[in-house]
Image (cartoon, rainbow, N blue to C red):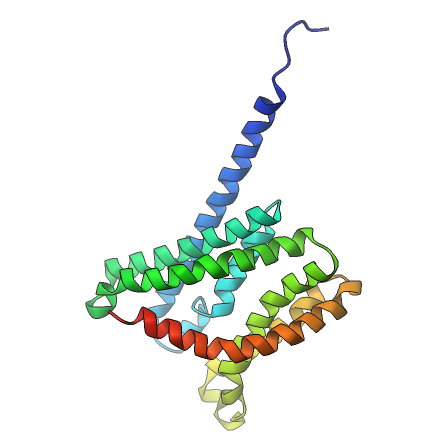
Length: 232
């Protein structure tokens, strides 16, 4: 038997924990930066080419936070990864605007970044936590976590797409309506694919309630936030 002392438990465990934390939060920063860069790039594309990179959809931003949260080992770190990711996305998006933009939009980048950064501080932990609950939870919490994300997708697609989808004769000239329709369908399908069979009824019950709230709130809240962000 070796006479040399074994490493202290806390010292043996610390490096792996630090490495995982650095890797996880580094991935959150990189993922958020990629989202912000894609959103900025899509802004510069002519319509309808910008539809090929739908990085400015609310559902895409919330989806990134959800995925980052789902990649975490605990629910608190999932919430933290979600907020880090969205804050990184906001920072990169407006740094690019301030650097390469022109006129009023570039001048007001810091003001707009502050407004949307505050939104990220609320939405990031909520959707990041929802992703972590989906991965680590069970029963109603898991169903609600999925429904929170799915309801945002459905609400955005329904509120901004449904009025355009009713004009079937104009669909050929309005591909954006099809994008919203796809988002709405994805919101309806998520509980089926992400939840276990015994959780799906709960998932769709939660989706029904949250979708109504989201659909009523998304347009006026978005309008207020855009109005605040554009005041410069």
